[in-house]
Amino acid sequence: MFFVQSTLLALSALSALTSADKAGYHLPTSGTASTTQFYIGPELNGGTSCGASAFPNGKSPSGKQGGGPGYLYAAINQLAFGANPSVNGAGGPGHACGLCYHITPVSTHDTVLSAQSLTFMIVDECPASPVASGGRHCTQCHTSDVNDYGQHWHFDIAVDAMSPGQYERCFKGVTDGR
Image (cartoon, rainbow, N blue to C red; front, side, top):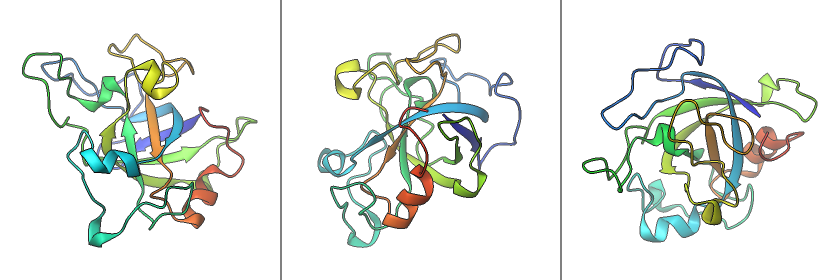
């Protein structure tokens, strides 16, 4: 589990969500979220859901956890992303693209690890398909829905974009999904 604070929105209780857009999407402003790890390298070949097809300055992902150039990128779940190609007029990059979230890990013993906090930019949508994501972490489409970790919000962390130091800082003592 990770505590989440948006760096672009005022801090408030998670139950006080921002108003929904036309398609019913909501952005988290604070609270808890689950996380998983993914490799962004393969996504860049076809472009992410936010349109990213390369790292800045010609850098490239490493293909391994914490071996990248030091970019803190994440994908966010369906409820928050803000676009769905299956909804008429709601396809393309979502309104979450480019937003930054300050994410604070929580240890396996439920200790908030404030010193390990990092700020991540949303560059992709976490795949809603349980086959593509390895579970039902990202499929929530309503604020009453929770994922297979019992959370409303989910961040998929691009670990091959992180530097070794960033990866160690963020994931030391943390179980994936918590």
